[in-house]
Length: 325
Image 1 (tube, rainbow, N blue to C red):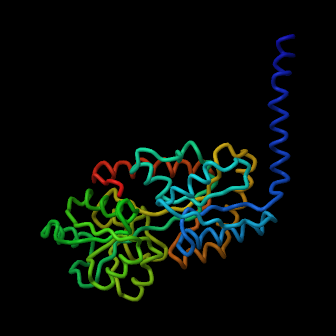
Image 2 (image 1 turned 120 degrees about the horizontal axis):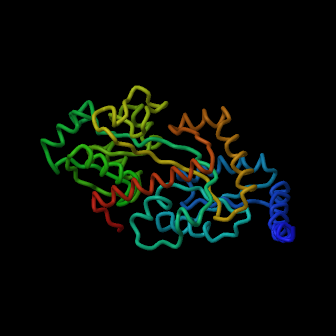
Image 3 (image 1 turned 90 degrees about the vertical axis):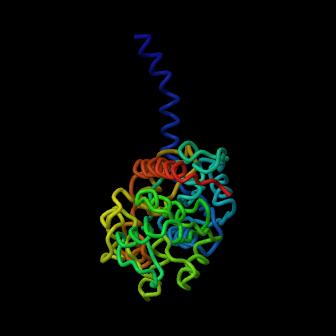
């Protein structure tokens, strides 16, 4: 009997702390939230963050203020979020660069993706599209592979920079298709797309929202999308895998995270609110028009996604010998 009394006594502090956490979650939030975007204003991440912050602020009854902290490929903003108090008042918009690519490129980072963040939900996903200048004589993925094999190293592709998702997308394609393409890195996707449209580049893998207007205006020729299933925005185009390069997959995903050790009841509250926002018809339609798919899911699903991406990019880094600039 005395052992049972001792056990009950030991469990009292835990139960008391749990009650406090639940009570705080019920009152949460009592002040404005900060939503860190690890990139400069005006880009795709910034646009998405501002859309989510507005809707989330409305549902929570407190302002959600976007805080752009660009620099070092997203490392500065990610570190700031990782080191913030784990009280539910700091969020960060996660993307492949700082969370799953940089950990494979740099021996040391001031944070660990799986240790220092608490995933809340995967927000959106969009495919990378294989696009060509119209002058390239290839009307399908198989024809492009044949053409590239006939001219090893002579065809070029552009990317948003060394170590970018567009770079990794093309290197994965090269490895699986068994071809050699010359890489021309740019400082951002914008200048690369301009040169592709102008005919100074031959092909590129780029995020669907970026190239969709050029595909629709016939300034670029699309061959396939990088996701595992066809894109709702470009349903007439096959996936790269079904078009002749089995196993290929390339997309970019954005998600919302908090600092590690943020109380579980608060993570649960944020997840529920964000999933409602992402599943609303208005947001789904708006995302679809931009070539993105609104996702929404559990923290566990987002964690599994991050783990898969870390492994995938690590494999590409080793296979292609990619080094950080």
